[in-house]
Image (tube, rainbow, N blue to C red; front, side, top):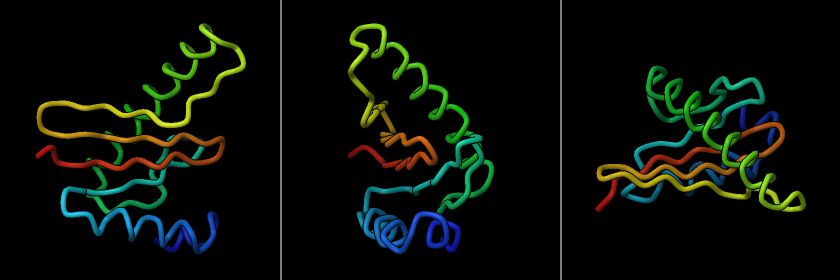
Length: 103
């Protein structure tokens, strides 16, 4: 979490800690602009897998949204499956991914 603290400020660390307090949250990941997980509460393989796929998916969703309305912008992407739910908040420098269990 020290990378989140150094580059994104103390608010990022507090936000990650607050998200992780929820009992359904499996983990959180902060992904840099190159697609590498900078800070995570998951194991490295799982974090790398989610980082790659969710970042690509949010990029494609944003491009699709831009084709519909050029002035619009993707704020949050929520992907729900039978077992898990992933929420991505894209930014120019970092993406925040929260992975949760479905109840």
